[in-house]
Length: 441
Ligand SMILES: NC(=O)C1=CN([C@@H]2O[C@H](COP(=O)(O)OP(=O)(O)OC[C@H]3O[C@@H](n4cnc5c(N)ncnc54)[C@H](OP(=O)(O)O)[C@@H]3O)[C@@H](O)[C@H]2O)C=CC1
Ligand SMILES: N[C@@H](CC=O)C(=O)O
Image (cartoon, rainbow, N blue to C red; front, side, top):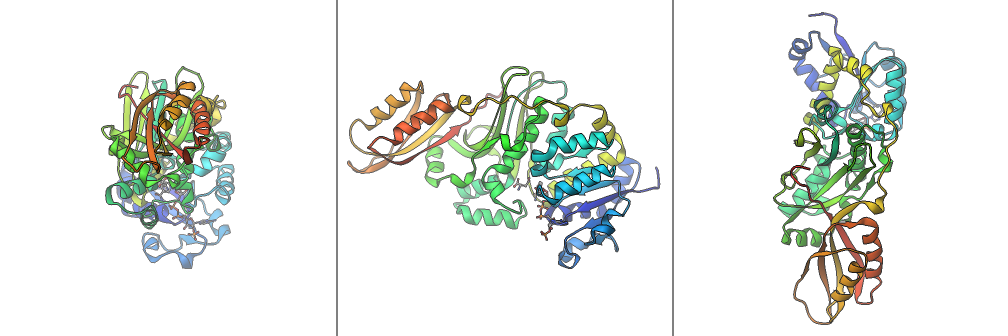
């Protein structure tokens, strides 16, 4: 075993940073044995040393913590772990480190979804690597599975619960009758949410992760901004309850599909109804799950904690150890697996994406309303799977739920416009995708 330690610099000592320094300090001997050389955190840059909570300083050796940028950048670390988040200063710092010949470990999906193409290219140019396991699925090694474990396959599609905060909120609302606001506050207190939780609840975080995963899966380049996203912040409790009556649970899913080899890719992030018997319906709390279909392997699924201090630190520290051991940098240099090695993806137009839908609208309880709605749907080639209406007082507005068979998003959108214009319909129609996944596709 070599005695010379590999030095690591860290920027950001928040939720994840605290877990990473703790793992390096408490597991140092095990890690040294596993990779054949010692690894140590040699510098940690924070905004203000005085403001770092005492429990996060506990595992940092004297002289390591600094809020002096010159002190940090002049130290001789070989691997930079970026854990500050965002796409501003994080972008500048990662670029600076790559140009200085340092390897990068990052959990920052926002950064990679926006600047990944450029940063991976810069890493290749400077003969260093970027490891990013924690950027998708928290502690689940799903990027390693996609990049290396499934390399033999043509990937036909993937879908998953990729945001722990949203899954926590939906679980607490549906299983424990908590309000959205209470559940979100708890997710923030537990360290699952982003510094700006709007990124979580709007579906933007899931869209960023989906762009990274779909780029790897299909060997293309997709930016986060190209993935349309609808979040859990638009959900109405009555729809979750109607869905439950029909046998569905609600989940925020990222889905990506490619029907033909080298064909166009469809990507979307939105709340979906999934049948209660589906595996994905049984993923609760901050847990995430990613399902990937490969033409040779068939259907695979990866499950685990998608957010939180230690699960995320697990992925970050494993990345750093893989780089320190030497194999990761060699694989990064030799293989063409990152988006900078690929062309931009051809994306399926939003209006051509097909799915089943749940529709709910408030209609006057008078004869002929449902016939008018079903005629509009029929004229757009949208066939109905079920209709549900609770008893109400004649002449009052009452919610009516319709589920459809597969329909194109464009046809559905124009049908919705016509339905909302009917004088018997009050307010907006709610549409929620019903996601169906064959176990072998
Ligand atoms: N939390 C989780 O479960 C997961 C997080 N991630 C990702 O990991 C990264 C870190 O997340 P998390 O630890 O939760 O975030 P936190 O907000 O808890 O921590 C970020 C830390 O970075 C500090 N910081 C901000 N700007 C600078 C700067 N210029 N120099 C030094 N420090 C700075 C912040 O200081 P201050 O507080 O003073 O602003 C804060 O302490 C993010 O990219 C996030 O998306 C990925 C997977 C899971
Ligand atoms: N805020 C994110 C953290 C992990 O990426 C989440 O809730 O999943």
